[in-house]
Image 1 (spheres, helix red, strand yellow):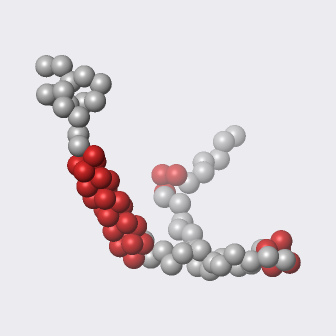
Image 2: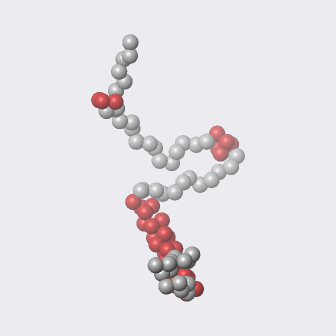
Image 3: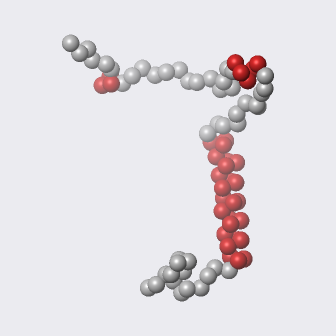
Length: 81
């Protein structure tokens, strides 16, 4: 079974219309994942870009970080003497 360089078993190339349809399907899938996946991860996008002193110094993050958890008991540091 020779697939050749184009990956087809029968040796025929894909038509231009088939490639276009596959490209549109992939683009629609990626756009859908990007739009609906953002809601899942609670991403609201980054803060708007700024210039001047605010950009040089920085500003507080738009979303505060959650509080830190205590380390696991098996991961606590042991005293080495």
